[in-house]
Length: 525
Image 1: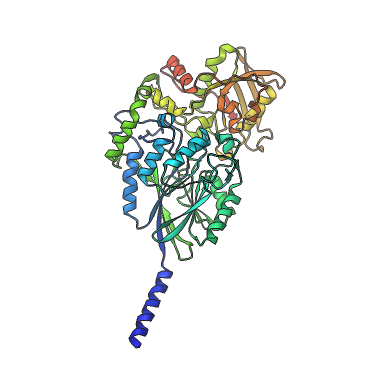
Image 2: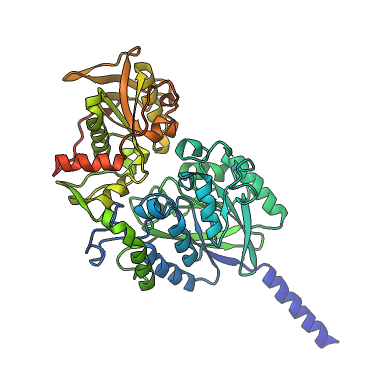
């Protein structure tokens, strides 16, 4: 009897110990990959021939295969998730749409992904095709898709996966302003992220899930607001703002992870340059005991998986004739970094706006406005290939010309500087117009002043009642990035001009070797 009692007591003691044992989970993550299946340069554009072999390039799916396998081998429990925007950004997407992304994500073994705004660039149907091809859940909590036949009853708000005997809840989050950024169509309505996340957290907790991860393609600032405004979220894996978080780099926007209340927020820049690795320890109640890690740089020291290199080379064959064609030459590097172009005049913005205006100046157009969100890379000095041009301008936008009043033009510029604090892509890069803006003024309340428009050989103050001829791209002309004042049937618009990438390539060729410049066309008080 005593022996039996001792055995029972020992078993109870062991059970109690197991019940209170910590649970360790490694969260591997990527975001804003943008079809960069091949390595990229330090400028986020294509890696030039020979540079990758010399260890000068970063990322690419073949490096991720190696790095993810290594990271998994260091952990008893790991998951691999993505913060959205796998679509758009290179010829691979232009040619294959979401098929290569699906193939590579399946190969890497992702456990979940949120919908990024660029997943809607070609409408819900292309997103649905991608979802049908992947082996993992694609999630979006803050939208009603019940009226969209391609996604209704298929695109879920959250899901539960298991790892090491524990349930882990995953919730998706997409930009609330996705209709301004992409083409989700009129059948989907987007909603406040805080309320949407809390609703899914409550649902998961009611199901007995106490470890909850939000996959958020909403930006670093929104992620912090979600963490502050909700309860029960343990980790937010971010995206959309291409934020680099680190504990060792002076270039980081914040620590990795950034803690807000009890929530750990992580993000790993973009384009596959980093693999995020967050090691989290939970107690038995699902509370975070410890969260530590660092984005792992995918540089030349990471060996490329040979089979993946070979597969991507096979997929590249239909693309090579287009992208290897040398179309121009630059005398210096041209800065198109989003952290610059989305808050001020930038070299790439001037180049693109100048090229647009040059193309249609003979039609009487005097003003060009380009959204900085359309600028996706910088450019190295030397020979320029069409592939590099298409990396900078990957969206297949066409030139659009239209008429607008001076008052409408000022309203457009106000919209352009209205979200600088959030580094949004609506910031205007311009030609044929100069203006000053004041960040101390509330958005859309008179931030813009001293608007001067090209007239003859000089500039004159904008006439609010006058009609001006303007060129932009078809996305912006139809109201994208908040430019609602450009949309409508009353603008005498033509939206079917040449592809913006072709316009840029031809302008560079005519001006080559091109030297970038700034001239103060946008100034800040």
